[in-house]
Image 1 (cartoon, rainbow, N blue to C red):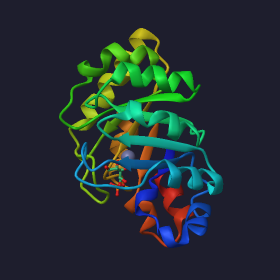
Image 2: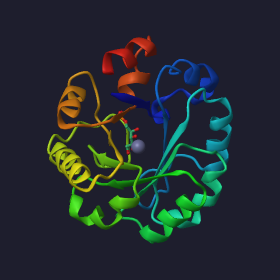
Image 3: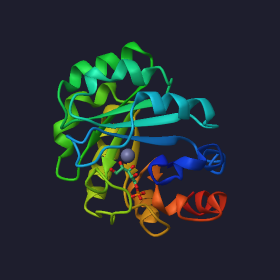
Image 4: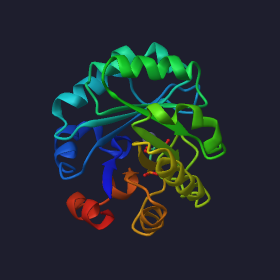
Length: 209
Ligand code: DX5
Ligand code: ZN
């Protein structure tokens, strides 16, 4: 299982040490919120670029914004591994093409109430599919178990069509819920509070793996 700590729960006054403490993880998950797509605001491309300069691991940018197309060029400057947009956002196909034009991995995400069928037309060009296991907006919420049916469906679609996307889950991941994710076929788990609320982050990451 690959692990992507979500920087949202990190201590931003001590960011260099915080990022170093999770250097054994696979990706650093970056939650971008615009106060419109979700009822919260996080930070933007300038802070993300600074994070990219001190992060020992590649960035996995999760855009929880209504108009991703407007922002992709700026976030691309951080040279992330993935930029993920939401299916429920505006101009999905145009945004996918924009991410591709930067040679960055294309991620497509769905909220808990959105069915997999809504993203089927885009799956052939996805490098990552992010299944939200909480309503996006805040860290520290409880895992929605029903979302795992979507993971199983995505595994099946991938096999049938020989697609190559990785399947990621985000929200409510801890030592117990990650086992359910592994059994369902998840490739990458995002974890915010579980990792950053522990003193020994390496141990936290290892226990999730
Ligand atoms: C939720 C964010 C998540 C969040 C996860 O909107 O997309 O990445 O930081 O936090 P935990 O792991 O605490 O649920
Ligand atoms: Zn996220």
